[in-house]
Each structure stands twice: as structure tokens, then as C-alpha cells.
Image 1: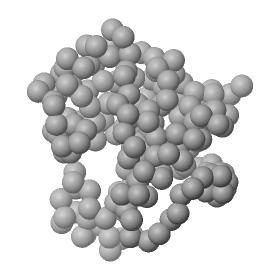
Image 2: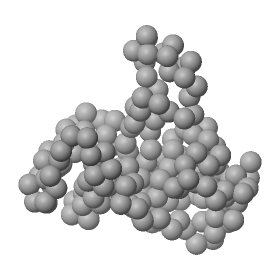
Image 3: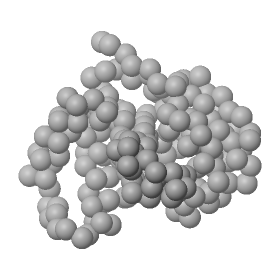
Image 4: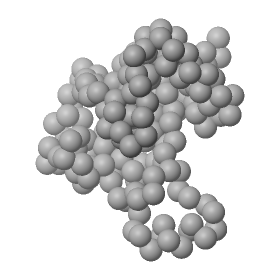
Length: 183
């Protein structure tokens, strides 16, 4: 078996970071998570830092002492879905088609909240039925709160959007070398 390693960052509060180092991560369940109900990391440390500023009321509003948790994630290649790789992206599309055939989801344009729930349920299904333990997803949102509008406006002319990468890990067993630093 081939193993893949990632050096990743998680933004949180100091109390949570101490608990994480002592006992591991405790995923917060939510039906609208991007990549399923797992533990979320950034590849980019500056995005983990941004997360500690409380950009969303839903997930990051209880941060009193901003802290970055740094980890190494190791996963077997066959249990990894890395949508930055074309073959994994295509496989994901095929699995999504399979998922839609066995569920009652009815996709209609304009139901963004419903689509977020569908996406989360799909990735949870992939984890549970296809042994996917780690998902790497990229996001190119029109408005990214961490980028000033002037940057988005300038860079769109070069056709070089900023692509955010998040990693969702479904098991603490994949997470190693946990350390943290209070900002």
C-alpha cells in the first residue's frame, strides 16, 4: 500500500488546541459541511490563521485566543480522494452519478441550501461505503472573504483565480505530530 502525507493547519481556540493535543479532534456534525462530516484542515497556514478571526457565525465564532494546530496526515492512497487529480475528480463524478441513482435527492436549480446538504451527504456516503478516509477539495468562490475585491478584480483578467484547498479527514488515526501555537 502506498501512503500519502500532508502537512496541514487547523485554526481554532487555545482551549480547543490543548484538548486536541491531549485527546484528538472531535468533528462537529453539520448537514452542510463542504466535504462531509470530518475534521477540516487547510494546506495554507494563512487560511487557518484567517479562520481564527471568526469569519462565520456558524463555525468559528467562539475563538477567544486564536491558535493554529499543525499536523501531519498520513493516508493510504486507495483511501484518498484528491480532487486536484483529474482521475480522482472523474471517479468522484462517476460515484456522484451512482449516488444519485440510489437516493431520493431531486436536484433542482436554485436550491443552494439543498445542494450543500446533498454534497455533504454524498461525501459522507463515499466515506462510509467506499472507505474514503480523506478528501481533498478545491474551491474557487466568486467572493472569498480573505481576498480584497481589488485582488479578485485584478487577477480575473489573468485568468488565474485563487484556488482554496481544504482537506477533510474522517479519522483521528490518520492525524500525527500534533502541535499548536497561540497567535
